Amino acid sequence: MNTSNIEDEIFMRKAINEAHKALDCGEVPIGAVIVSNGLVVGKGYNMVETLSDATAHAEILAITAATSAIGAKYLKNCTLYVTVEPCVMCAGACYWSQVGRVVYGTGDEKRGYTTVGKNLLHPKTEVQKGVLESECSALVKSFFAKLRI
Image (cartoon, rainbow, N blue to C red):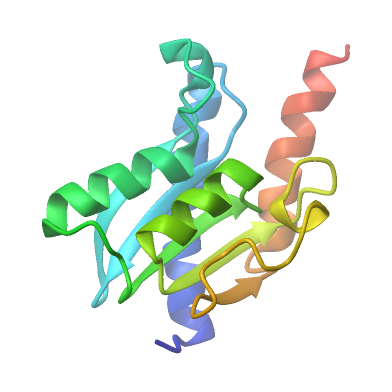
């Protein structure tokens, strides 16, 4: 399941592209892609405001797309790339779908799953944090800075 740093950056850039789609819609700019065997099988971006649905997080939408694409409820051999550390809800979705690996860009010290506990993901899920961290962090920080003006 181990992936090279170059591959992690390539797929994180795809997640960043998804985050820009959220930004274009006035959403918190978080994007996610799910990769299986080097191919994107699911992607999503925050659509909470657009859908008036508190559960329409990038990770949830990407997991739904991926399970549909591969025709299975478990994503054991997949990697989730997400620009911001998953929240507790999304960590739970990763747990239940048994995502094999989670790679995130920047941490979320207010709502990230690690604020509650580090064991919220499936026990076999590998975690890599900090991939393109400065880009992912800058995107979210600039969004919230504009809201506070």
